[in-house]
Length: 457
Image (cartoon, rainbow, N blue to C red; front, side, top):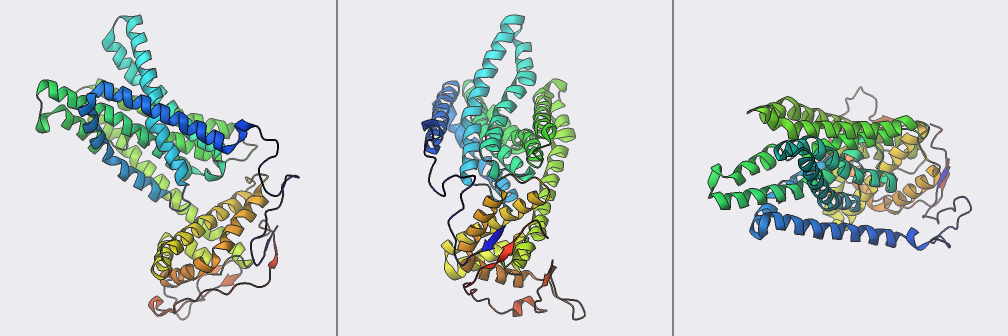
């Protein structure tokens, strides 16, 4: 049950807990700064160790060359995942953790475990060549995908509010794999450069050029593609109810197994003959990449539809203006709203509009889960937190969203009913959007709105 006060009020206590402040008897290891400090220290140590190992393998000059070339696809991949995540953006701290885990912790685990397993197989079989093949096609996929999946699992468990569906799994897994591929590319490109220095290879015929073409030009998405299958499994698990125990466990495991299988096929493509790599690339990698791209874009459109469907109930209750559900359910309208705020009130206002859009999207997803019986016990508290965040930013965000809704509204025929109609209200626009008047700030509300039950409509 939520009401709309004229200003934010303190959050209500939950189950007898104090209204504010940390737990009185929390142990030292339960404090947030202790956990953050331990995690940061772990990643920093892993980064230093992996840096030393890669530099020892490639040499200083090879390391610098590999670092420069391996950096090239990283901004493009991160930008692609951020674009997919624009409906409900993940916090940057989560993405930074995922990238650091992939580049440092997962890469260190993979190097140590793969080297140990390959040496053990070579010693046991007395056949180093078959040990390398077995290590690349069996050991490496299992170790690497498990190490990368650990980051997805940690975000799923400890940042559950930020992990609500398939797109969140795709983004978390993809950024983790991007970090892992970054470190791996430094190693491969640096080693190739060292080989060219010994053999005198230069230009297009060099090993460095061939490695760059295969890993950076043709398949920069390879590792993200593998791990995204794991992320989709966790995303489906996030959509399950608390009673669907088998689904919550089975889909992440199934996604992990698919990631391992595709990774093994990719690593073993060289054993399929002279053109095995290109056959696997054309027959499996490209179609799977296209299929997953379609899936995440379709999921993103479904999320926008959820925003347009769920938010009108809050507009009826008075928390949102009548046009906001439409504007918040359109990526173009969102962009125009941020541009309007930046142009008229500066970067700080644009940032508040972006935050408003994010909180409103989280509110829509929360209500959607609640109507489907997937909301947790903290539904009411979480709903109130999100509504309070919207209320604090309403004076800046509402004029911008109103302007964006007017600009993006389609022309309405004279004989047609007013557009759009969401639930119990309608809102009409001029036939020519460019003739719409400039919006003015909404006045502050003096009285609270009536109580609202989000499950009622």
